Length: 391
Image 1 (cartoon, rainbow, N blue to C red):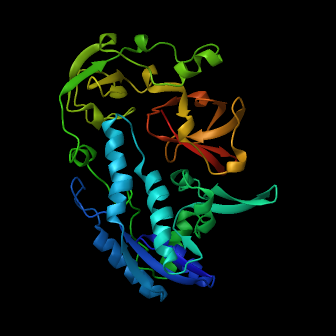
Image 2 (spheres, rainbow, N blue to C red):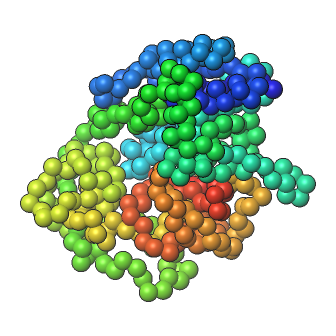
């Protein structure tokens, strides 16, 4: 059984490679170059050249063939261009989710097949299983055993074909065990820190990074009072009110008071605290809404400001994705699932209502900082069932 491991130079993929080698896989290591431009990248961060060197050293340590493939052009078109477009529209994208769907489990798999690979392995903290329904095999994506490192959310847009090829060797391990194995085997990446920031780009100064293409433009910062933001929850939500309570509140300039200026609404996201540089308040200011057309950002004072909280969200029909197509909801159906709208957010109970226009999701408890453009992912126990882009 030939397997290609995406060897990144990090400890997780290095240990994944070691485990596969121990299991007898005919293993090949393939390192991806996905980004060259360092504009906006914070100093002191490792470059792809550093990562490639450590990855090659790990491959030599494990005595497996090592190759490098440059996917930077595809990454720019399918991930980075998407990210710029989403911010320009006033949405908050998750490039890591797109990177997995478009690069690691699509373009990269095509590259792996050139080596006659049966499977493609990564260092993700998640697990894979199979089930048979109606005589057909379906692949299940399960949360990683380490709740603090579970990365299933980042794979929420994968499909059955992609999952059929995937292997996740460290999914059942705890992070300390991965570190221990790396140290015991004296792998070159044993003491390397976990990567941070945008997938394959690294930790960046986001406004500087975005200003490569998005122009700065001065606009108003308008404060919305907690009283105006209104009740946190309606006493009873009927179907006629679904869209209203599942959409961001449409603030208008006359709803609040101008308290400062900013350099572009596209550089801010809901729930953000840093970067406003406006004083005169007892508690911190948070972004509660942005208006790209008018170039306005709306803020509220304090972490408990009701404008930060929403009872639900909406996903358009065209944006609903089912990892388990056999569990697709029919129009008019409703189900109970647990959801998260960002990485490491604890799962939250909610009711999903499938209607012709899309999916309305109402949480049991108000949720803080829901932003358009994020991915919502829903789980049945520890299995990721589906996902979609929040309107």
